[in-house]
Length: 257
Image 1: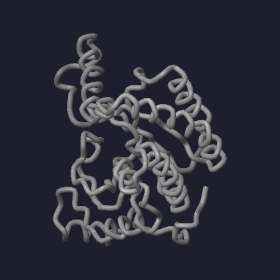
Image 2: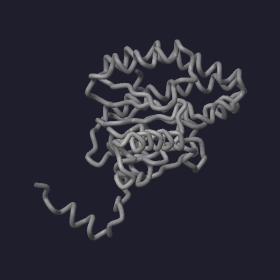
Image 3: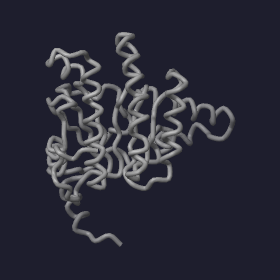
C-alpha cells in the first residue's frame, strides 16, 4: 500500500471508532478525463487502499465502505459486468495484503445474485482474515438499508411464529440484534464523496445518531488529507445523543469507575 498522499500517522484521541463511507464519483471522475467509467472505478480501488491503510494506522476500529448497492443492478449490463470482474480482481490482489496487515474482512448484503466464483472468494476472504485483531473492514455489496431491516423483520417474525419470541419482546434493541452490523459499534462518522447530500439507502438503522459529512471531492481524489478534514470536522462537533450540552460536559468531567 502506498502512503505518498497520507499525512504522518498520529493517533488522535477523539477519532471515531467506526467510519462509514459512500464512495461516490468514480464515473464522473473518469468522464471529466474523457475515459470509460471503468477507469474511474479502478482509480477508486486505489483510493480504497489508501484510506484503509490510513484507518489502520490511526487505530480506527471499523471502516464500512458502500461498494455496490442493491440499486446498482439498474446500471447498464456492461458496467455491472465490468464491476463484477473488478471485484474479483481486487479480491485476488488485496485479501492476502489485508491479512498480512492484521485487517479483518467482512461483507454485508445479499450475496446470492453474485456469480458463484465471486461468492466463493468473498467467503474465503472472510475465513482467511476472521481471527485478525486490527481494523475491521466491512464491504457492503448488494446491500440496502431497507433490505437489512426487512431481513431483521423476517427473522424476528419467524421466531414469533415458532414461539421463541412474543410480540411484546420486540423493541429497538431486539431489532438491532438482527441487523447486519449488530456485533459492531454504530458508525460515528458518515462520509459521502462526490457532492451528493443524501444517505441513499445505506445503513438506515445504524446511522440514527451518526455525524454526517459531505464533500464535493470525487472518490478517486479523496486521499488521507481529505479524510483528515472530515475527521477534524467530526472532532469539532458535540455529540449529545438527546442530552443537553451541560449533561455531556458533566459526563466528560466525571471520572469513569
